[in-house]
Amino acid sequence: MSIDSVFVHKMWNDNELSKMVKGRVPFPMLSDAGGKVGKAFGVFDEDAGVETRGRFIIDPEGVVQGYEVLTPPVGRNVQETIRQVQAFQLVRGSKGKEATPSGWKPGKLTLKPRPDLVGKVWEVWKTEMAFD
Amino acid sequence: MPEEMKIGCARPTGGLVGEGVEKEKEKPIASIEEVSAMIQVGKKAPDFAAPAYYKGGFVSVKLSEYLGKWVLLCFYPGDFTFV
Image (spheres, rainbow over the protein chains, first blue to last red):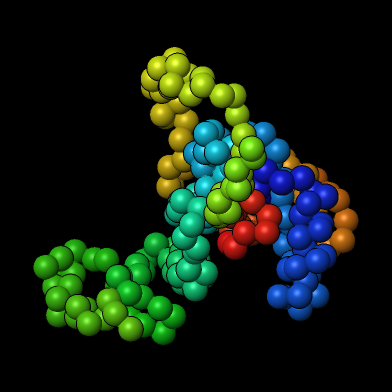
C-alpha cells in the first residue's frame, strides 16, 4: 500500500515488477491517496506526504500480532517477516501450548511454558540457539 | 534558477515557502484519544477499504474480507522504490 494511484501501480507492475517476478505481482497493490489508512496504522509521514515502511502481521481473527516500521532508505528483511509468520502460525496451531524462543526457525526447539520450566530454560535452551 | 533535486527513497514533495516554522508551532499536542487509537499488538487492526490493482484489473479490497487468513500488510513510500 502506498499513496500512489492504482494507475501508477499498474505502470509499475507492468513495466518493472513483472520483469522481476514471474508473471506479475501476486497480491493486491493497494492505493491510499491522502494517507488515511496509513494514518490509522501510524505510518503516514505528514511532512513528506508518504507512508513509511510499515509492515503488519494480521492473524485470521484480524488481530495485529506484530509490526515493524522503518524510515524510507532502509529496506525490509522479507525472510525475517516469513519467519515471524511461521512462528505465529506454530503458536496458534499449538493453541498457545508452545512458544518460539529467540532465534527460532522451523525445525528448531520450541518451549512449552509450564510451571516446572521456570528457572530451567537454561537447561534446554542455549544462547547459541539464538543465532544460526 | 531551478535547482537539481536530490533523488532519494522518499517521494519528492513541494510545499508553501516560508511557512514551515509557524506551522510547527501551531501543531497541537497529540490528545490521549489519538495516542490510544494507535496500533497495538494483540488488538484488532482497523478495518479499511482501498482501491487496488490486482491481476490486471482495478478492484476494491477490504481488510475484513481476509478474516480467516493471515494477512501481511505492507506500506512503502512510493512506487518505483524498493520494498
